[in-house]
Length: 472
Image 1 (cartoon, rainbow, N blue to C red):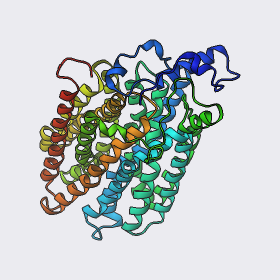
Image 2 (image 1 turned 135 degrees about the vertical axis):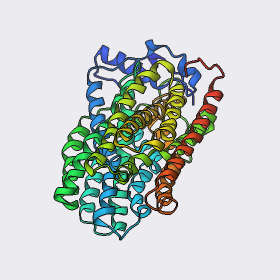
Image 3 (image 1 turned 135 degrees about the horizontal axis):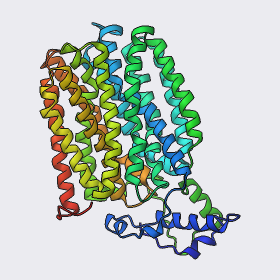
Image 4 (image 1 turned 60 degrees about the vertical axis):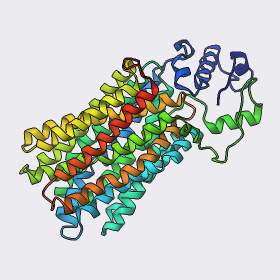
């Protein structure tokens, strides 16, 4: 949908009554920015003068988004510590690797699968409401998990329920910084989502220590309390800089449309917009991300048990996940800075290819603690860089902020296929082909699906432009 609005059209809607002249001008420019064309080519030609870059409060928003990513995704990325504890303590000789892996997989799967819905909730009801509900759901899930005694109970609590809550907070914290910054959106988005890596850096060793000293129930209750104490205050600081879908509907109902503003009749999809699927580039993007996610989490889930299998002590093995998460945080920030200069699609191709190479040429030959540490840092950096690039690529293809939450949610929903089959397949390979000790099959599986993703991404780059040196 393309809309044309003039400054005078906006100022007399009545939406900015009582505001100062400066505030009116800022609101007008923000609205103009949101009404840019949906096409990547048109978005690329939009003058920077039409945008107002973020004020100081934008950094408060980025910081609170960082906190949400740190707590929620940091815990998801630390599941390898829980998995090792379940296999060696809680459910020793009672459950297979395949069965235990499904706990963490269900959380990631539901996070992705609910993407179109939770992303649309952000766009329509606002980021603050969405995150506060999500934080409450995550806290409840951890309390219930603390009293779980069966694997299937953890499927429901630490798996499905936690994944549902995380989905609400993840897409809100990932997309909100873009409303406050225009010149360095890749960088600030990278800073916000780097929280997941920083969280994993300290959550992994802390959880490992708590599990060994205090046991499972005490550990889960402490984590639940941490969610409540950190996330609720952070969520209250969330502030959108743009009109939500609900506010827009109320404005139009009360004052009518601006002159020249075109409002499309409500589609059969309701408030969720799937028109982006008509763009071949976006379809290739989501297919490639589905392949990436099939292999992406295997190192996070299995590096701890892999290290112990190769003679590394348990505390050092847990540190591997921490290093992987920490370097992922650095990779997200670094690639956010780089993609602002070379383009998100170029950055995506580079980061995915680099992550694939680390699997085949580092993990395959990592037999000592030193080489495992090198692999953990290298893979975390490249994998984290992919996350920043994928989000920015979807935003660039969508060409605007109005539907960023919905578009990103659609991308992650398709990724559900990969997140559902990826780690369980790795677990099944380890149980059968690897006989619980040989991880070669796991490495080959992870590397192969990411290699396919790289090829699809280069195809997307070719569809976008045949000029190898163009910024896209």
